[in-house]
Length: 197
Image (cartoon, rainbow, N blue to C red):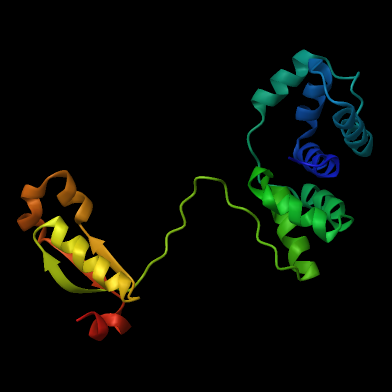
């Protein structure tokens, strides 16, 4: 459950990350906004000096489709830098939790502000992104059958040795290819080879 203050920070970041056309489109769409959203939306429109009545809605849609995503401009990065410089450390941390939702310019400015203040805050990666970790491993045994490999791996893990099985999923799908793949490989870190043997 987000608090009203967290929601204010989130909405301020969302509106500041939007382009002028996106803001004007919201102003013309007639979407119902909460009182807090209306207040922050009006503040962002006022801060940018936009006139919501001067551009017809048809012109907005044409301008939107004609736009190509451009790299963040220095002016846009500077705008975000000014915005983030007045936020508290707690607000920056809350913003970093949803950092994957920010535009490129907002993301760059947030990284710069966190570095400038020397904070130990990581900007969140988008959900569902795998982070791969490469380990050096050594094969200590090969097994033709999956049950034997699982027993050996369990024995090593119960002794506190981190162990991995290689090609086990392929052999689970079709045990007949075990010989073709060279069996299921039981692997450990190089420093654990002696203890594993």
